[in-house]
Length: 420
Image 1 (tube, rainbow, N blue to C red):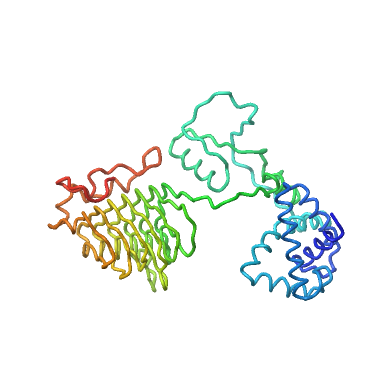
Image 2: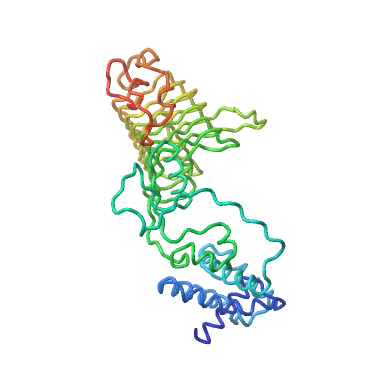
């Protein structure tokens, strides 16, 4: 590292560790940090060094001196000012991980373990087969790539459902005991490819399938995609039931969300006897905020039934929401609530059965081919079944929703509403 680079690293380390010079091990952290950066891929290394230089330049512009030349109090004020600027705070977050890993390693090497070591717990039995010992050809019902937080739970769920499940993972098998004996930097380097410095470009869309968020208390929704943005969100095959607030909530979310083959029921009731209960109780809440942003969410083949308030509501969202072939049933208030004055929603071939009222539609909303457009009375006798027990029962072996072809299906075959 160049002399300027060494000064930048020393100043950054001193600032992030609030180093006052009384701890001898902090002097060796910059050298350890340089080793960390040298082990990373070139793009990540360049990015981290560039971010460190940017922080140093910020200090120079603010105080006339670089971080390494500042006293402890001055460095703290610079870092506090940096952290308070939303555009610059991510730069600081980017730098914390390698610095703290280097610092933890040096402290452990200088001071040793602090306090008595607890015996590590026994690892659960695990059938691990190295790649070189795996047969060239084999069969399984499900293959899960990666054993992280998502992959591990997916594999557990599949295996418990009786599927023969194989998990593919990169790297070595580390026991709890062997991992605990290593310095923090060694643990990180062993656990993550390229020391955790692999860069993923873009904003991949999260797919949220086959979930059953239920019985969430204290103003909790079944599933909330709200207060932010990000394209490509898909909710498919979910059951959102018996939550204290809404089944699904998109309050102040500015990007379109696709929801299909999903049901929301029993939300908004005080099952927990909360003294200050405030659950909204909508099946699908598709907006909100002051003002509510315009987001063109799409619902198709969804059901909302027996919720404490509305089945499906725009909740003030003036965007081009599209709801088709969806069903509401016995919601206490309105089945389809789309009365926002400036809304541009489209409601097509939907079915309301025995709701408090079928629909409220604003002047900008286009509604066609829905049960309330077709006329007649749509009560419980109009459908083949009002018993949800099949739909709310165990999922199919592949994880999909159980088949319920008669539930809320019109007796006369009218092509409105969802078919499950």
